[in-house]
Length: 92
Image (tube, rainbow, N blue to C red; front, side, top):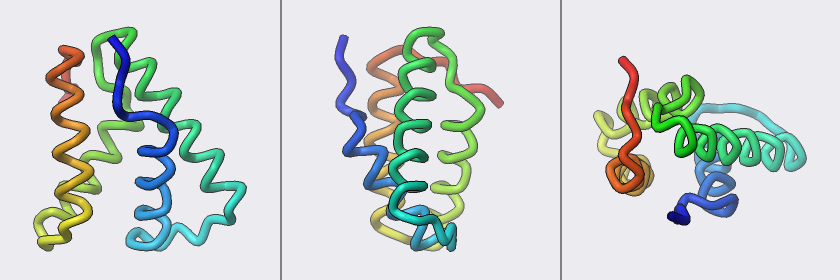
């Protein structure tokens, strides 16, 4: 089953994180981070357990959701939908 959370999705999230979470990453670093997120996501699909990196990302997004940041809500919705679709266990 193919995921809709492709490189472009993770790159968009990386751009968001760089701006909102004050990452101060260069363009090259953002591309690298997007690839790390994608690799971690694919690993999560394979193992059926959410990786630490993706868990922390979701945790940060949930903090932004509490501040009513619409973009964070959109990212969370897409990630949670795919977690359910791929039957990935979320770790506490």
